[in-house]
Image 1 (tube, helix red, strand yellow):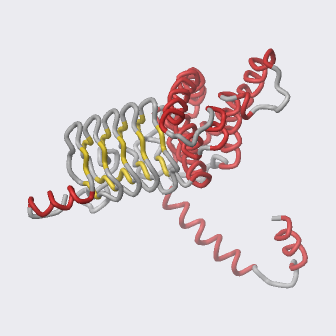
Image 2 (cartoon, helix red, strand yellow):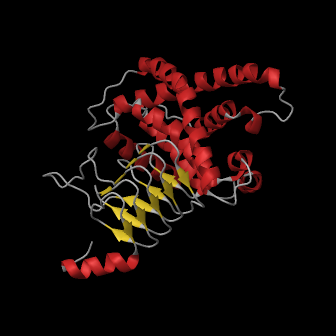
Image 3 (cartoon, rainbow, N blue to C red):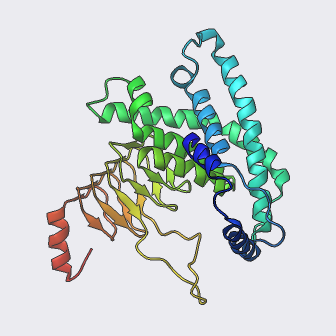
Length: 314
């Protein structure tokens, strides 16, 4: 960005962009008039939100992400010193999102920015629960991956843990109605890890994503306890419902339910509101669009044979 600023400074006065700026202003004004009821309100800040999340993660795991010289008897003070400004900054971002939501055309949501304080209080109270869930995820990763030499290594190095840590924070905000900020957190984790988890997805304890690149988990997915996914697994929608006006329907269940103790291997694709029964194993590269009973072992060959037996796809 510094080089870009230097080049821009050198170029000033050598190129007339008045017409371009005017046309962009016209397009921007038209777009805003279609989206908002009144004047465009201020937007939440993605960089600020990302900074807030990193601060909260450091408060959850201060030995790993706090100061290198943090003494054991100073940890509580560090946590409070870190959380107070982070939560205050989060409240301001939530106020901006709720004010923005009131101005969106076509939205029935009329949240008051005054609710931001209540949201932050509920979120803060949920942080110990998030830490307990993450500790269960760490235990599952250590027990499920022979390459993991320690819990500390998983916290520092495993992309699956980085993604689920941010998902569990984003999910708390999502259920509290702060969906844009939750999505910003999720997409930052996606960018960093290659793991795409919608903040609406409900995920039980002891969740482990091994390797992780290319994993996609949709908004209405429900994942039970002690589930393991490998890279490039998709828990997606099979089709999108539309209303009479042709607009896509929203807020309805369209992603899989994965029950407890399920393993889904690399490259498997599970689509639609199907249920993968407890204790099942879904093999690599399987394409699945039907329910699977508890205790099933689905492989490519078995899936292909059943498709031929049924006279169609699965």
